[in-house]
Amino acid sequence: ANYADKRGGRVLVRLQHMYGVDEHPELSKPATVKLNELFDSAKVGKFQEATEMTLTGNNLIEDKFTYKWNLEDESLAAGPKTARVAYDATTTEVTLRPMEIRTFWVSFADAATA
Image 1: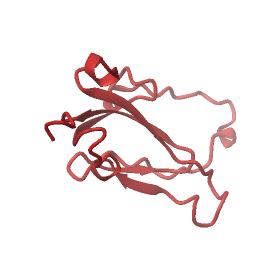
Image 2: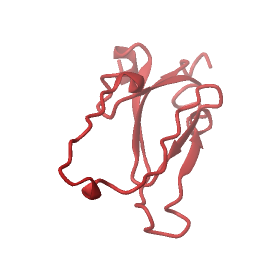
Image 3: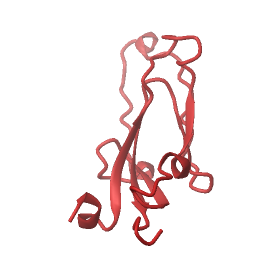
Image 4: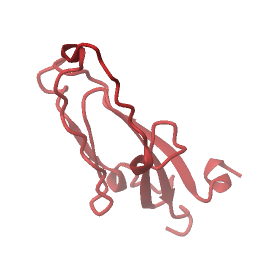
């Protein structure tokens, strides 16, 4: 038995953008990948679907709670950020901003039957 067998055919996948904001003129830009192309391999099976989760993989991303810090001095707040791009299940595209980590439960068809 392997990891996917014990989790209903799902595998926990994390994607990370390796560069920071303004660290490199090109490589610091948001990066987009298609999960179905990234995992297009007979070794892992055919990509079926992905569900985005929180970083720890235990809650759906849409159910996450974001704490709003009350700052005495709002000028100490982080500067403007690039807006997060939602996962598109239709195209399987994931866009990662600089230093962003995203977590997914990914399902594959059995490699032997795919």
